Amino acid sequence: MYRGDLQRMLPPLIVLLGMGLLSLALAVSIGSVPIPPGEFWAVVTGGGSELHRTLIIELRLPRAAAAFATGGLLGVAGALMQVLLRNPLADPYVLGLSGGAAVGALTAMLFGLGVTAVSGSAFAGAMVSVVLVFGLAHGTGSWTPTRLLLTGVVVAAGWGAVITFMLALSPSEQIPGMLYWLMGDMAYARSPWPAVTVLVVACVLMLPFGRSLNVLARGPLQAAALGVSVRPMTWTVYAVASLLTAVAVTTAGAIGFVGLVVPHMLRLVLGNDQRLILPASALGGGILLVLSDTLARTLLAPEQLPVGVITAMLGVPTFLYLLYRSR
Amino acid sequence: MARLSTQSLRIDVPGRADGSAIDISIEPGQVWGVIGPNGAGKTTLLHTLAGLKNARGGQICLQGRSLQSLGRRTIARRLAVVFQDHQDSFPATVLETALIGRHPHLSPWDLDTAEDVELALSALAALELKGMENRLVSTLSGGERQRLAIATALAQAPEIWLADEPTNHLDLHHQVAVMRLLREQAQAGCGVFVCLHDINLAARWCDQLLLLEPDGQCCWGPALDMLVPSALERLYGQALHVTELNGRPVFVPAD
Picture 1 (cartoon, rainbow over the protein chains, first blue to last red):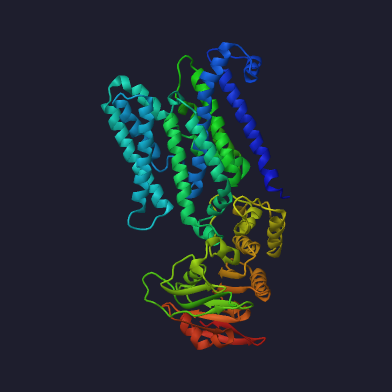
Picture 2: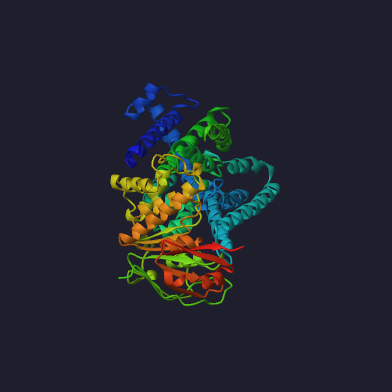
């Protein structure tokens, strides 16, 4: 029997929220100096030793929060792109955004600029790519998802060539840093606030669009017949998804896989109501990235692995299992 | 007042010269049928009337107000479209799909109320889809999907129905059931406009007919006046045998 909307949506969101808090607690407790649960609780409630306070609040929490927000941004952006393009293979980078950002970031690195400049340059590169793809996809004719998708793929291939070219030209001591950026690395995250703010604002703004997105997933004609102003809505959502992705890439490099797989995993379990999938993707993406980043910095400590490697290693088997089990 | 009316409407079929200007007025209680061969522009006409496609010229009025001046949501509260083909790229259940019909009546922050669910359920029951609420649409047969599309439009509670081949994929029983449903909607005060392939369904259920020719020329009027065998033979390029059943003509294609 059908249950009311809220009754249906709240339990999974509460479970995900709980898992999110748990993953954050785990992330701040694990590291070179492990913090036992009792000590952790003491710090949360305002006590604890000076060392533990510094470790948790000043060192580990900002990084964990940045990882959570970045994962959330990628999850939401991926879910939006999949609905807009009505293509399950779409991910946040489908419009060539990560390539543009990478070229921006690598250029800044080549000139030996600092982290802030690398981030700024990556954001600029991402925006250039978005404008380029939308401009070219519109062309002289009409504009369709297939055309947009193809333009994005080809522009991404172009960026790929530029990236390889830059890597070939770069001095060898800069290559590891560049490769880490390309695979995604939370060590680049300085302050979590931009990502966290953008994620929260985007989730609140997208909430009322949920049902319209459900309608839009049934194709533009059907959506228009059911009262959705298709064109303004599509453009707004593209712009939002691109902005979210750009902020994520700027925070932590081009972390793959989260945006593609998290929304799909959640759809397999929770169904395809965007009002539920969008906030769930924010939480699910955050959880995946926090856990991945915790593993990335502890697995081979003191060596740090790029987090993108771990997201794929965790995500691929989970996703394949869910897909195999699904109807 | 007419539910939907057109003034000198010229539909836009790419690569075709302007056809006749269409001046029709769909009144409450009327069932309009459009017949014509493949490619005559029946679907284009229907989409144009729904405001989903631009016309080459002329005006469309929804209850006296220009369609162009109305927002999509306002239009969708009064006018439902049943499309010829249905896309479902992401899995959805039957009930979720029928509930989509309530979309134009809900503001962005609203959640579906018990009343919306009730309307969707009774629409499903009216199309004999009761008991399938939790089935995935992808597991339905072609005919069941067609009935689901009509149930979605019914949940929309429109005043005007624009249905493109509503009897597509349907068995004989459900063809009759769907045409009867549309007839009842008209009797309840709706204006109904359907594209049909089957001239016998058109003859049996429509009271006004519009004949659309491949070159865009068209004529319209009360159904019995329009069902002239020679005109239909010319329209379809097909010889017809005509007989009569309960005072209505029945057409059978000749060899």
